[in-house]
Length: 251
Image (cartoon, rainbow, N blue to C red; front, side):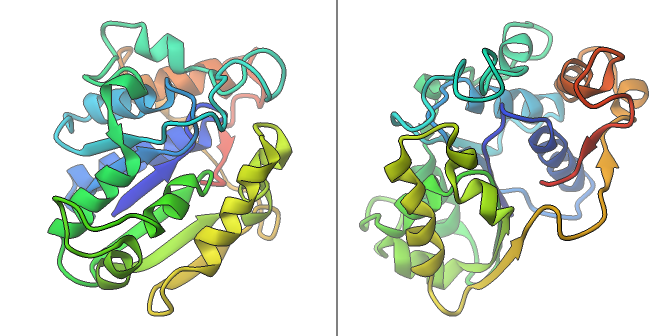
C-alpha cells in the first residue's frame, strides 16, 4: 500500500497515516511508502514523525516539490494554513523523524517509482487522500534507474486499485484555497489518464453518515506520540475546533 497525503491542513490525514502504520505493524498491510502532495515543505516532516513513532523509519517517504501550496502558513482557515500542527511535531525532539522537510526528502514520484518497481505485478493499492499532483506527475515519468517502464506502464503493471478521497474538494485544490488554479486541472489528468486495468474508487464526503475517530489517542497514546499531539492541538482539546469526539474520518 502507498498513502498519498496532504497532511497539514487537517488531522483526518494524521488518523489515516497512523492507522496505516498500525496495520503495517500488525502485519495486515505492507505499507511501502507515504508521500506528501503539496508544496508545503513541512508536510513530509509530519509524515516522517508519524512513521518514526511506530518505528518505521525504513518506510519510504517522498515529497512533491513545487509552488503549488508552498506557502504553509496561508490560504486555509486564516493564518495557520497547512501548518496546523506540523511545526509543533517537527520541533519537538521527542517526536520528530529523520526527515523534517522536503529539503531532506526524495521526490514523491521517485519514491513511487522505487517502490512500484520492486513490487509484484498488480499488487499495490494507493490511498490518495489529498491533492492529485503526485499521481499526475507519476503518469508522465520516463524510464529511469528504478524501472525501464514509463509512468503509465509502471502503474498499469504494478497498481491494482486507487482509492481517491473526496474528489469534489481535493480535485478542486482544496476548494481553491491553495491555488494557483491551473494546478487544479491536474486532477483530470490524474484520474482520466489512468490505465483502464487499474480499479478507481471515488469516496466523496457528505454521501454517507459522519464517522468520528481519533479521540482515543488522547488516552491510549503516550505523551511523545505525534499522532496524539496533532489530534490534541487540532480538535480534541476543549479549545479545539471540533470538540472532544475526534475528527470526521474523511481520509
